Image 1 (cartoon, each protein chain N blue to C red):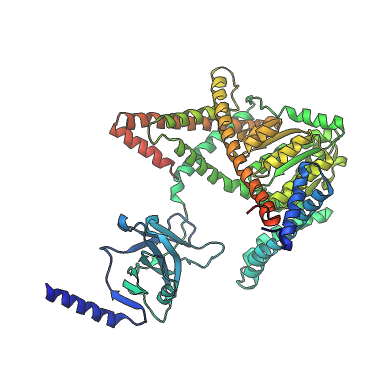
Image 2 (image 1 turned 135 degrees about the vertical axis):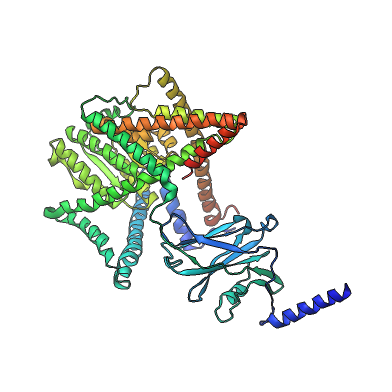
Length: 201
Length: 429
């Protein structure tokens, strides 16, 4: 295999190296790659918002479907721009309040549903040692998250069992994710050595 | 016997010559691979409309066969719902989505047909079947290019409709009502002046230490809200903690930097910090440019915040909100510049990284309780007490389930089996 002749592979390889140079210290190459990534992602984001929101959800329903209900969210969205005018900037709080309120309200039933699913998953559908571990783990972890009781005596001992379960789970998750990250790194090195430099097949 | 066989052959040849209209296509009307070869459909219950569920129950021996589902509307327009589904999947949903809102319209009659085949369905055959002119919608056996396709009869007319209530969520609404009463009880208790206790949360006492240390070093404080939106609960909790941290920052007359992922979160953070500075009596120190937008690209945001950390060298870094794969990148950079780091998220997959790389970590609900701990408002303390009672209820439920399971499966007692099943069913929302 030979070194790549494709212009874009060179760009990708040099940008990869520029980002990795951060591992040494902050430097002009990293800064260039960082600003490029941030700038391009903002530009891309604007175009996505323009097409997926302004055109698809506002312009098309309004102009073609004559759906005037979209004027309400449009107005709420426009109120965000009131921040640029000092004397009416307080108006921007209306859409924020609406979004926060709606988000919080909508999360209530889904949180409950999630809670039910978790309790269901804890139910010992068969009797074995694994089920016992799950039940003990869940109960002791719940005790750890008791905030209106001081963690002393029996409660303290159970909560210590709970935090042990949590840390064991974290350890497993940490190892698992590191494995995934290492595989991402291998993918990048493979790209550099194979697609770019052509050292390996 | 010979006579019968000959007659059958003659009948088959006649059928083929009668019904084959295209080259390479043979059609045997009303022939089925087995009895009750049919698919059924119904409106998806408890949904917002625009959805029909198609089901089939074929013999297990056909589990590796493929099923293609076609839809015909009132006007006779045919379209493909799904191709080459494994028969073992037993069902498919024909649902309108944001991408394709006109797929199934409420109030319109739809008729569905299934095509069973051993191989994946031939595209030409499919096009021939759905074309209005050919009208090959009859059920029977089709042999096309030596491949056999079994076509079911059309289902009865199925109409999709929206439901006013999602009845499967009745246990949720009952729990919600009960818990609301518990919350109200504790809120009233708190209002009446009863002192409610909240245990010490490790890490929160370090807030003052972190802000003080940064001030002494003459360095700013960086507060990262993660990549959540303002509708996400961890982001809302992060904003509440930001309010308290900002107040301390204003009291210590130092600087706070809040790089944001989402413009609405940025605007909200600006409001929160401004209010906190005003509360602390130092509105003059507030600079809205310190709460800035970076980008809405996950790793673009991580790269931007990392670069900012390296240049500004904050003395304390707060990572409070919703984090995903960028969590370790941010926490490691914060660690490398020697900043005191206090993190918190509800994302269990990211918590191990925070535990490993930060000085203090608020685990899951600790983050929610943090805002209460910092403010110690009676109303909020009441909600913490109510939540704890809910946890006791869950624990009791699990223990009861465990005991029932021992009697049901360990000792094989019928009544306990029934009770256990009842409990499990109630939890399946």
